[in-house]
Each structure stands twice: as C-alpha cells, then as structure tokens.
Image 1 (cartoon, one colour):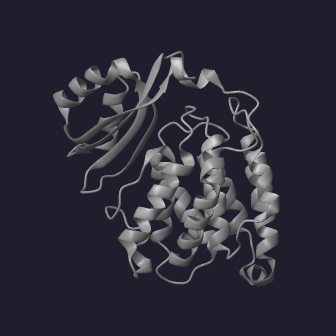
Image 2 (cartoon, helix red, strand yellow):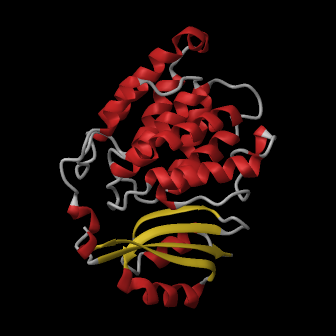
Image 3 (cartoon, one colour):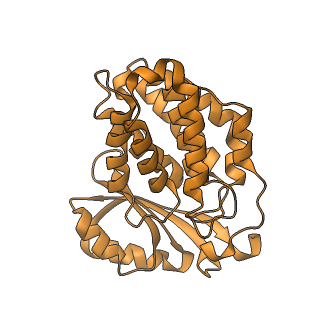
Length: 277
C-alpha cells in the first residue's frame, strides 16, 4: 500500500493542476488536485515505514471533499489489507466505508465509481493480474468515463474525485499513468453554475461532533440548508462532518450545533462567490 501511495503522490504532483481544472461538482472550487495531494502527503507522513498505518483513521487530517473521500476509501481498504488479499476484496471493503461516509450520493460521481470499480475488480481472476494489469487499467479508465455520463450537471468527461481514485487503483495494480489518461482532462465546455444552488456565497463547513450518533447529526443538519454532507472519523475521536452551505447559514448552524451537541474544530472556508465566478 505504501508503494502505491508513493506512486499516487507522484501522479497527484503531476496532475494537480489538471484535476483542479476539472473540479466543478459539487461546487466549482477547483481544488480536488490540491486537496488530494495535501491529504496523501499527510497520510504518507503519518504512516512512516509502517504500511498497516496508511489507512488508519485518526492518524492524519484529510482536506476537502476529495481528501475525505479518498481517506474513507483507504480506511475501508485498511480493514482487509493486513494479509494478502485480491484487489477486488480490497475495493469492496473500501466501497463499504465510502457508502457510510456519503450521506446523499449524486449519480455519476465518486460513490458510483467506487461501487462500479469494486464490482469490476472483484470479478477479475487473480491469476490474470500478473500479465493483465494494463488491460484492467484500460477497463477502469473506460468505466470512469462511462460512470460520469450519469452526472447530469457534469460538464466535462469525468468527475475529478473519481479520476483521483482511478490513479490510486492503477498504482495498486502497479500501473502508472500513460498517454491515454490525458483524455480525462478535456477542456471544460462551461462552468455548471447550477451547482451553487443559487447562493451568492458558498462555504465549506468542517467540524467534529462528540458523543452524538450519526442519526442525531443528520437530524440536526436537516434543519439547516447544507448540502454534500459527509460523515467520517474525527482526528481525535468523534464524528467528523464536512458539508457545504450558504455563508449566511454559518451562525444558524453554530447555534443549532451548540444547542444539542459538543462540537470541536469548527471551521469555515469560502469556496465560491458569485462575483468570482
């Protein structure tokens, strides 16, 4: 796993700008490549020489939607990777954790690709991997493009977060990027303005809730106008919450949280303004 992550880090360094460029969903903040690179850098630093720690929750901080999602995938993979297992089993375990993380998945985006790639990999004869890894990688690229057709508001060939996962899985197959991967970064036709839901300002909320169940958190968040909700493991325990919403909702969200939950590390980051579009 550490060797794959090191290769993935090199790929993210190479494709950071292109991944940022095609990042338009759930909002056009163009930071997928940056967030993935920072997250994987932290994972490698936290793991040190111990491969078993590469996916362990609580050892590193993830950044943005894409960082949290790739962290969830690695966390699920870590549950089965202690002993040699087929990559299909790794992908299925990873998919289970991602399903728990994304509260309201959107068609054609990260979870769809996670599930479809896990299905593809689980059907592969392990004996085929030795000589057929490049063929499988080609199938994964075509699957990435096919999956993205299900995203109604996506105005490029692939979803940026899913593209990041594609490069990670390739590294797990011991396959690096090739010239055919350049097609994934086709120029954008136009920015999908509908993804900002008519808000003049959209912000990212990130916080940790302690001593509260997932269902209680979801019930609380349903009272305010937040979107793209993801629930993961807090760095020091509790449940980490990542979501988007209009900037004007900040005080209301803080008040709602303070009334019924213990919240730590509450952070707000502006990711979209109408006058910056």
